[in-house]
Image (cartoon, rainbow, N blue to C red; front, top):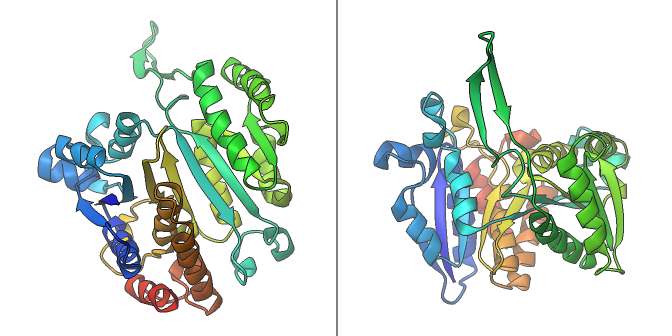
Length: 347
């Protein structure tokens, strides 16, 4: 069980430290932790946000536990040298194409969400986001038009095999849940997503036990607020998934509670909280590490098949929350290490 720990920038170091403490407390046989630099930290030390040594560590690992990247000092660098390129580079180099982001309201936190409690408590969904295509990875640039105006341009595209690959992940996830899959697209405007919808329908024939529906992304954003209980599994493209998963985080109370898994064709995966590096609170011990701890649970489940241990971690987090252990993101006053201690005590 070789785990690469890439803490990254800002609060990444603090939250991954607590997740590592939880993993070590389980006393898992064969667990080996390997560290590497990513993001702004890596750029300042090695001149690149994803050094070759870090990439080699990732390739040697069975799973990656990732913190966060982002550094205000690096905002003016050329785009390929900015901290965020570390996570994009890992996704591309390691073939991580499927991002799983569960969103569930923890009991007792209904009043902390942006929704009415009776609406919020219905939320139990999984967003499956394609990671390697779409406008994020298309050709892009800034050009000057004949009349002298500057114009930014980005190309959005998906090949049918890329859509089919993420479709299979989503359908299998739905089979393990309540058997409902909603494909979110913009087929009424974008040819890219007309193909997306066509391929989803084609793949659905292999999964007769899963109910497939379709929804335009603008309506999906509205329905996540109006009636989130209707969703079981949502599958969508890279950009729409980026936006909807962050929206879902606020529907359940805080971005500090949402874990994620990025999976490749094999068992290797990258596991990270969906929040950023929050440089403004870095080093102050204020960050909520629960999303990273829950990401470690997802790692045990998806990369190592350790369902019992994953469930133990999730139960410990839920118990800590039920007992009133809350960070500042949830209106509480518990610090990073204090939250880690509380989860360990309940483990």
